[in-house]
Length: 302
Ligand code: SF4
Image 1 (cartoon, helix red, strand yellow):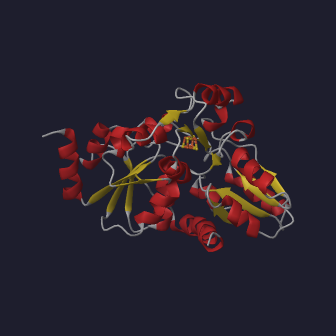
Image 2 (cartoon, rainbow, N blue to C red):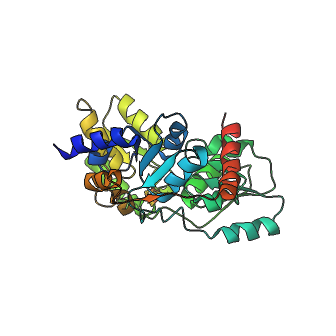
């Protein structure tokens, strides 16, 4: 029996579903029942039949699933797979800020820990950030943790007093304008789609600035070749999935998130055999406080 067949059999025997973030390697995407960005996965978790979820991604994503679907058992195959950006801020610092600025609203990118979400007023995704922040009425809006996404929103909404935290995704932030110009020179006929976690001097050259899902949609619908300006897992999956289309990597050797590549099919099998992985625990009081900021996002994002 092949490893894939083994995993399929074990999934059925253990009432388990596999979810994979879009940045996972192709061999994990192939095993997944559901793929998507972190918030899409968390929303879908609420409606699945299976009791157990193996989350192929990083820790804050497993937390987001647990926040929205607390009745599910959420298992992280690689417990050390974390997102450096999500964990960049000590929640106490946000608490301090709120005490000193009681009229400010704190907005957290969905790429934050549950402990941080619990200290914030509203969450946003990269696709809902503009719509939601535009609706906020406060003398000051603190955006955490990503200065690049926050800076993109600030530029689009000059009337809002948006204060940025000095956080960033170390992968997207490492991209340089030179990387972008080289890719455009190599593929002059291609359009460029970029994630707003990339620095401002890079995204200013993009034809589309959008979330992972928006980049994928744009690339699939485009009549022209597209340079995929985000973590390389997106292009790794898009290229074989769309044989009639032409997609190019942007800085292929640089845009790799090592935490997203920690999970292997063998590890997934071991999780199903009960030999690996960590079952995520979230104290109920913390879950409810974190959920408030996600509920606010759902309300304001409509
Ligand atoms: S790509 Fe960046 S934001 Fe995404 S998980 Fe990796 S470090 Fe975090």
